[in-house]
Length: 266
Ligand code: 0O2
Image (cartoon, rainbow, N blue to C red; front, side, top):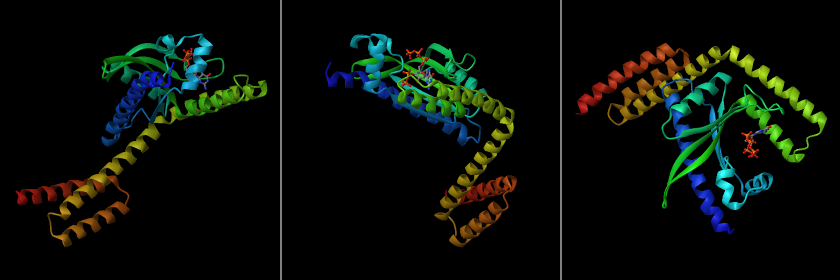
């Protein structure tokens, strides 16, 4: 097989990753711009390296022609959540989407691997458009918490270092660490409401400040400069008081002023 054929094979998978990254980032943006808690904390994606594909082909005894049928994680998206409960929300969100169709699911959270690995895996069908028409691909989605991801990343590196033969004493430490991850996730879940409330408030304040400053900036070209500077000073004074209700009230009043200027402009 020549290098050009690898490109032909892998380019549609890269397109799938690029599109899915845009889509999942948009989900995060939509939640945050509404000041709502998003069950997705972060997302990243990759196309499997050719060396890793070759390794999997060797392990599974696959020919080049079998790659797309036999290797389901050529395209992989990892969705990171803050809390275990968020994983269910993300799984449901994916099941309800019409731009991907779930092929299989593996729940390594309720059924962890012997290694201690925990994560929720879904293989989905996803269509990309190429010059040869629509191509249906399989994409692996790994959904896990920040803590699960920390453990899996470390364990993956160690597996690579020791070529899958991790010494027993290190394996024991990893098992202990995996138990600590379960405990950490449980403890974080217990204060989930407190944390999400604080994060929502932070996001709402950030949105409000951005909105106010945007309105002030727009007014600058319409209104009397001295008046706008006075409004801006008033904003900074209210901001320092760290009271979101006062900021909300200021924002409403500012909208009213801006509306007046717009009406005058017309
Ligand atoms: P890499 O290097 O991450 O790409 P499969 O071989 O994928 O057809 P399998 O192994 O039953 O079948 O699939 P599974 O269990 O869903 O695992 C797929 C991927 O999950 C792996 O891809 C890993 O990324 C991750 N994973 C599974 N088990 C473990 C584990 O014990 N530790 C860690 N750190 N990750 C795991 P690859 O291709 O094996 O590896």
